[in-house]
Structure formats: C-alpha cells, structure tokens
Image 1 (tube, rainbow, N blue to C red):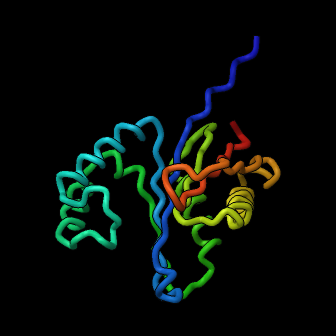
Image 2 (cartoon, rainbow, N blue to C red):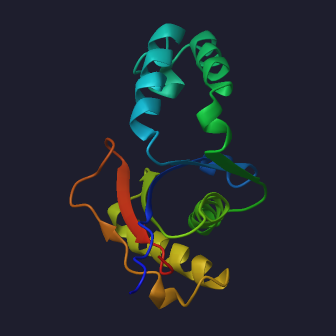
Image 3 (spheres, helix red, strand yellow):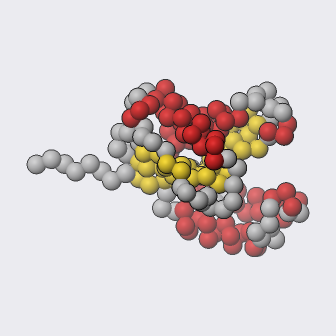
Length: 176
C-alpha cells in the first residue's frame, strides 16, 4: 500500500519593485508570500487603509501623513513578519533578473515540501512574462532544486489578475 503524497501548499506571491527611475542607483524589490491567510489579510489591510486615511488611492497621490499612518499600522501585523521579503540593491540596471532572483529567494525561504505558487508581478508587461518565468526556472534549477525543465511551465492568465498592471504566473514545485 503506497502512501499518498502530501497535498501541495498553495501560495500567492505579490511582487513589486521601485527604483527604475533612479537609473539603478537604488532598486528595491519586495515580495509578499501568503497562503490561506491571504483573504483575511486583504480585509485587514483594507480596514487599515480606511482608518489611516489612505483609502484606495495610489501611493504617490496619498498624503505623506496618511502613508506614514498606514505603514505604522501594518508594521506590527504578525502575519507580515514571516511573509514579507525584500532586497535593496544598488548600482544595477538588470531589473528583470533581480526581480526574479528576489522572488525565487523569497519562495525558497518560505516553503518546505510540495507547493504551488501563483506570482503576481506589478507592472509586468505581457511580453515580459516569458522572460520573468524563464528567469525563475533558471534560478530554481541553479539552487539545486532540479533541472529547469522540471519546474513546469508558467501559465499567464488571459486577463490581468489583482488589478491593472498585474500579470499572474503559476509555478509548481517539481518536487511536490
């Protein structure tokens, strides 16, 4: 009688970057990795946006005092302490590779065992999706987690998910 393999963990990675406007002097990539706490966290963040005065406005168009209140409110959320990853990079212009690298590192730090992850990259253009996916597969293989062809394909949803400017990528761990 064989054992059934454990069900894979379902993860969602939300990736954003900032700093391309500095011509590479400072480039920051952040990755938020969530599992079943995703929906509850979304509701909590929306409530904090309302309470801080930020509401649903774009970050750059929000008053500094509202942004500061929002950041102070989310700073102490326990769920974010093990789910938020970032890299601060300097003197670089290889934005796509470094965004993929930061994403791969975050996934490797968070997961243990089989998993499936859907990656949402803010501002990723449709023609950049294959390049980003290839970078993730190459980095995953380079980390000793199997051959790049074992990682599986990354499928792009036919429509952006999580709002305009987001592209969804689905990635499966080849070991699960």
